[in-house]
Image 1 (cartoon, rainbow, N blue to C red):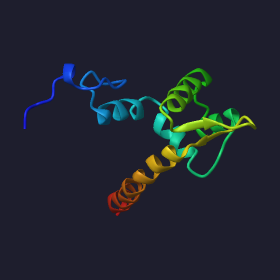
Image 2 (cartoon, rainbow, N blue to C red):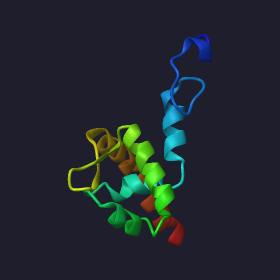
Image 3 (cartoon, rainbow, N blue to C red):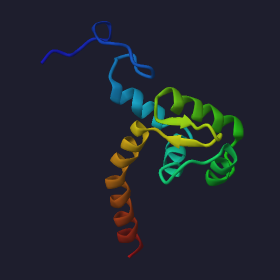
Image 4 (cartoon, helix red, strand yellow):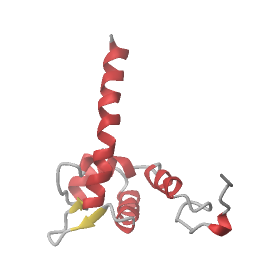
Length: 112
């Protein structure tokens, strides 16, 4: 199978190759992105509640990440001012659960 070149592929933010997985990993690899998604998995949080849940992360960085996650379609701002996961955000978090369970087993094994 021939290698797809950047000029023949659709551009995706965060990836010059147009590969969506690279753009997703770029977004999720940014400081606080995964933590924000994780903290919102059980329900909506206000900016202040989210900042507290994220160990007092810088408000500037937190707002930047929320903006990126909103633009990507994973997080939305509700009428009451709280942030929550979109359906796509919930689907993304669900994909992390097997990795989360593996990490807990790995930790338990490492502690033994």
